[in-house]
Image (tube, rainbow, N blue to C red; front, side):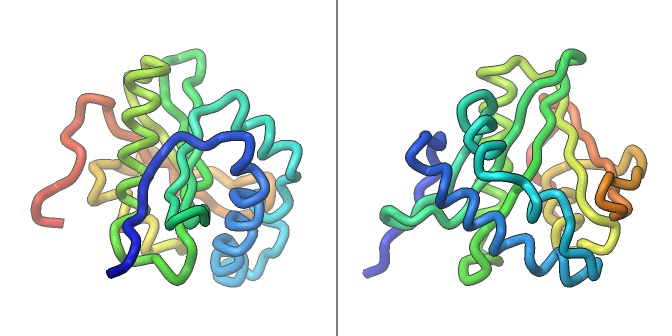
Length: 167
């Protein structure tokens, strides 16, 4: 019988595992855009440490191993900004991304009073876009990141139904 994956708030002891996991997970995005300077790959360990200390950060654990993570904060407009959602490549396609996304939304709505959620993903990242559409997000715009990648901006109201039944 295998172990189950649990979702919990990240701690300072998780920072290095989150940092390494992020680097691993975003390699496929870098390859997709032929750009190995995308933000998640150039973020520093100290920056991740600061986010874990200040923001809403959840991890997925398989035993002691961090196999997924997501971060968010609420901006001055009451919008929960969600970012850096990643799941270890060997565990992708099993619903962990959706579970982490729901955890971030709940943490931002309950703990940080977010009234809506916003996230972004690269315009070629079809799996990400599919996940976010199923979670009720709608495209609200596009922007080019500092790393040169064209990003699709998506939002949903905090009280919106979480997942479409027919997705």
